[in-house]
Length: 98
Image (cartoon, rainbow, N blue to C red; front, side):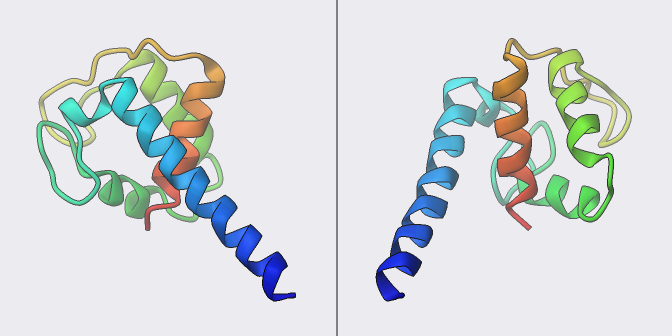
């Protein structure tokens, strides 16, 4: 039982690190940070804002891929060059940061 729990925990840590690495590779950290607002909101603030909303994942995937403006201030976020799968991974990671 302990071994299974450790394997599960290791997988969860690996998931979080892998997606943070993806966010770094895609340049997300140029405008965002996990805990602190930069040009755009902190990832944790995004997670809090969309927590429990049933359409959050689809909405945020669209925002990443098509860009947007006006929700967090006047500076627009341009469309990001990510695949559907990468956008979904990023959103799952962001929403896990509550």
